[in-house]
Image (cartoon, rainbow, N blue to C red):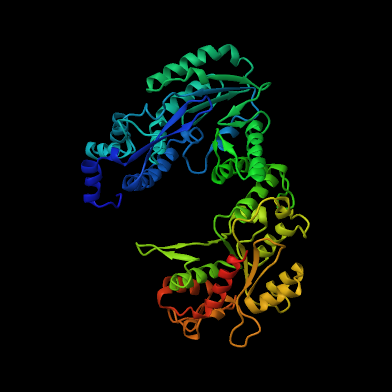
Length: 541
């Protein structure tokens, strides 16, 4: 079922032992204490992921049958999260927050084994249930930090959730659970008088299921005070806590001024800061979808503009590697293939490891939904390259000049906009050159060296494919030999046309995948002038 060799499973279970595959670290809590994380690694983590893939399909089946559970558990469930959890409690008269103490520790080995043995949807043999418990428990309980723990807690808590829901309905309460966070809400004005009876009944059910209430985190909050659910305010609409946003904004200010900031009194990283901004943006995006207004790059809120500026800083100012932005995804496969073929010639762009795999010393800007929204980068096409340029110049309305705003920051590495060399009217490069208004020296560099710096003393460069075979325009495919272009696949011939008879021809997408799969045997000599230009651009001071 797990597609794991019997010998490997036996080794993990009985020779190395699962406990040897964990490492422990601590993360700070808001109260100053630390949360212990026991994270699995190596082959055990791989096996756990294979296991949860199988369990997830069972979970969806179980939850579908147990329809009463559908709107209760919101953690670690596809299509759900803190926003769906908070949404149910928005704009309520009263909210009750209850936290379960040592939630994962309370689900011990015997409980995991017993669930898979006795639950009517599993009813596994004792030996199989034991192996599942051995693979997923650490020191006798589910560890917080293993990928398998969350989904198992949701399954085991199905019965618990059902009985808590019955109590909640008795007191006219809505109920959701996000891992160890239980939230109840109501508009019933008489509930405060009933709270003591409700809490006593709830504690009894919690205790019956082997859990303990963290009394210090139990709160009853009315709408006159700030109501929060799993870190989100829900008084009128769902939103990130204002203090969280202000502290994140302060980190951003410190980053721009000092190239350094702190999180929880520890040196911060761009990854963690992006995580905070992404969290805030997820909520903004949710509210945008529900407010009935049009939202795009020209209609960003203040918080979205902060995030946009941060993303510009991350991708184009503090980029850890030189960035290459291409017109299309096939161009990326061509360049990667050429570099793998000629890795000894271009050690500054690619290295080959001892195990035979490759590591690129440059990064290729990946198109994504987020970049499309914040930088107007479509999934394919050259207009996106022009839009990147706009953020360096601010020439076009709606595109702030973030490069000038961050003028105290030097770009860590080059950013290369790579165009097909098509300078005739109506082609992307011609349109870009017209808008960029390059001087004579820049035009000469582009014609003779295939690259030029395009904004002041920045590290933003324009690179084009070289003209070959006497042509007055070239695209990336022109750099291949004719024998490669003549490759027949499944009886079909390659064409660069966007519209073609698929019974006779195949297009760029299939050709690029063929090139990538056969990079070792293809002649990439035509790419040398282009790759040389990229190297020279990157090395330009």
